[in-house]
Image (cartoon, rainbow, N blue to C red; front, side, top):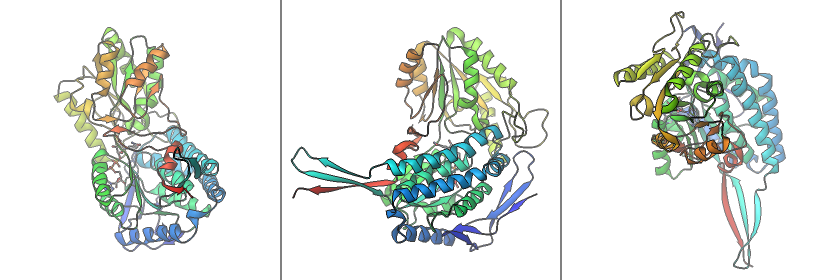
Length: 480
Ligand code: NAD
């Protein structure tokens, strides 16, 4: 059965799109159609931005009591929770995410984020009277920044949308959200939840479309701030436009993170933890630790342990709860990942596992779990984001060299350090140039800032820091 939507959610209701262009959703496992939605046009974006402008400038949303904003976010959380099964299945069907992960992130984490920012909206003081050393007081005021253009990718479409919606609404902003054409069905379920939650008209609007539409939204004169998650290449173009427009922008971009396995690590614990740290969502995860740094004293042992673990993973239908590795999100993306595997071979890395499509699966965009050993950190597969189930094991001598290799990357988003001595691991973690890093595991804490350094981005999401990024500061001097 396919799902068809005919209208767009703009200004608190379902409106007819201005063109008849559509976006098709395809099942990543069967390659069959899942449904289709209208593609928004520039005229639809104009309408959405105008609705958000009116909600922000005139409807009073920006000046509502934080308790009312919190109540709206909690109603949204309830409406999302009711639809969690539908949402998580929809994501897994579209992008191949194993259902267990989808339930955890696209369902549970998204709901938790809405409730977290609801609580933060009411507990945050937005005015602070600060004594000046010059003998008078200053009132420092935080106010919502305005209309937000939010653009998200296809890999975690629900949680990444909520990562922007929740803090923006908690701060009092209105938002126009552009989902990726790679995963569109879920955004209509989100819109249905917003409607049921009676989020005031114009406060959240959805405009599904491709990169040209995203570029149009970024530069729209009615937008006050851009919040982007996606590739570094697109992030650079968006940053250029925002620089020209002097428009605040948050950029959550790509990564090529390292797992630093120290010479005293328990390899059983490492492989258990690497499933999320390195392979979550079939490797289609921005902070995935796909460079495995192994000490020369235990190099062969690490390569064997990683290969044995990767070959034990269950590859198959993402809706089967026992599946650990599903298909990639599109045929085009699988071709890209296979191109990197060819490049790895051509540049002299030693293929120890996988390297192609799984033998017993004849449809769906699968790539078998793949391990390269003897990888040079300067090579393409060690420097570029592959975004698939492909790990590179790189040899080092001593902790200092491990840190040097980890830092020898254009990116700095995630990372992990593995050791039986947690103090030693912590001191290594402090020296890795990255926005986030885990010790003997990798988790994402919604109460702590998440984001990247270097080409992995600018700004932070999660925690109180994300809400601050949707606010502007004003100092009111009180000398009299
Ligand atoms: P992408 O950059 O191709 O597209 C992301 C979104 O931006 C899509 O909605 C797309 O339509 C839009 N877009 C593309 N070019 C644009 C432009 N010039 N102007 C405005 N909008 C534009 O990325 P993708 O392939 O959809 O997603 C995968 C990438 O996202 C990976 O690089 C991954 O690392 C990154 N990512 C980062 C994080 C993070 O938190 N740092 C999280 C998830 C994904």
